[in-house]
Image (cartoon, rainbow, N blue to C red; front, side, top):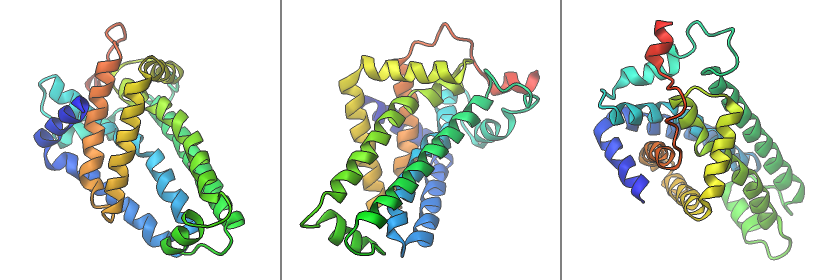
Length: 257
């Protein structure tokens, strides 16, 4: 809850620029729903798979929180530098550079796609009747008298979500903040989770609960929930990892070189 309080403070200080991130995520989710609404066998996996990639989309929220922490101005220029300028003059340096964020985002997208396909296959092949809308999913999957399709769907989703959470909760803020390789960042994230199992389990449950709340409000709750969790995740990283021994990674340094 301490991280959420700090995240809320950053959200209030950043104002519209933070809420714009949440609005973008909500609109993207609405597009997914509109495309797949009558194909709920695909929608269930598509929404959850989309949320797998959400930590990458929150990268500029971490940058805003870092700017506030340093006493710098947290505005649209921070966001534009985060997304547009980090790759300048680094097209041939695929190792310890911001390209590792691109690599990590691609891996998360691959994991999300894998879950979408797995979820669609489960629902299509094992559901007793075609699942075309949310009501069908509730009636024939969640509330089915026989079979364990919903339980299997949840277990497989958890098997995917657990390692992804452990691999992302620290990795992206750390990659944004410090110069190190992708593997080192992921291992650092895992070590932080394994060293703090109960707090991190509570944090994962809190993220899940707030995300679910944002989704059941016709996705509009994500306008607030997404930036709140993004800013809070920065403070989770700062509390859990002592990165003082690693060189800082700065957009301004990238531009100057």
